Image (spheres, helix red, strand yellow):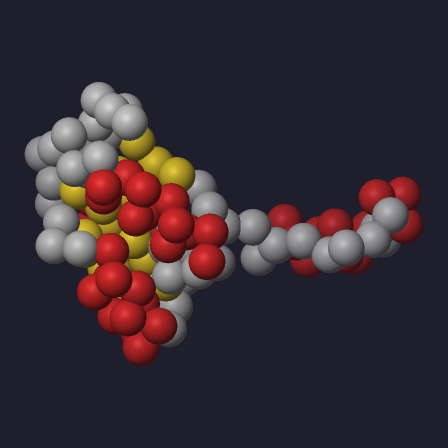
Length: 110
């Protein structure tokens, strides 16, 4: 398959997780330069090594503005970023109408 992304820089957030890693690998196989992030350095290093030579890893979480700025500074080091795959999210498995205001606010602030 040819996605037409050869040489494109792609950021995959939370790239050390199962879905993030699979996405990053698929993009790397299409000859994209892949930048992943994660909070756990050991897990990130294993994933980074498994993706391939055009992968770059940034140890940072995105739950804070500071963490997001670390990833943004990394991205600014490239001439351009083709796109971002936002693979982060927090959720509970429950009935939507059972979510309390407190739980809703907690998710927004994470």
